[in-house]
Image 1: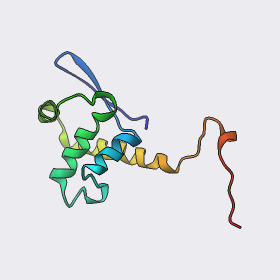
Image 2: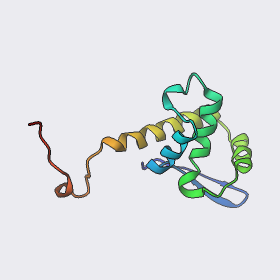
Image 3: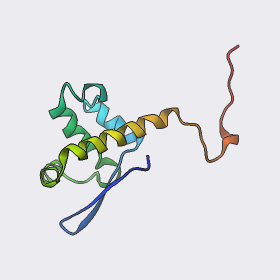
Image 4: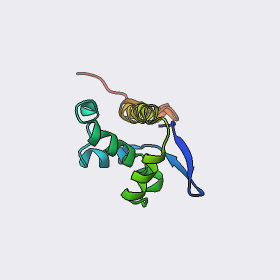
Amino acid sequence: MSTKIEFNYKNKDYTLEYNRDAIKLMERQGFNAEKFTEQPMTMVELAFEGSFIKNHAKTTKAEVKEIYSLFKNKRALINQLIIMIQETYSTLFDDNEEDDSKNIEWKVG
């Protein structure tokens, strides 16, 4: 979950990124990565709003919509959000690389 989108809006610095909690909340609100091409209006909106959850949760929906409307290269932005969401999903399957001794060994009996 290291990829971030950074920008300044109205003299305030923003860092957009996801974590597991943000993705869980997005999913409860209806986000489904598999439906991105079927329901782009809904999924793009949820993905962009969800990128504010980790660091800027108090940003209003109206302000998020205004910020989105002002972004250049929206297609590239959405592609980057998808990559960031996929990175977050992949953390479900990652081992604890910081301290391998904490990882639990398992076997099929």
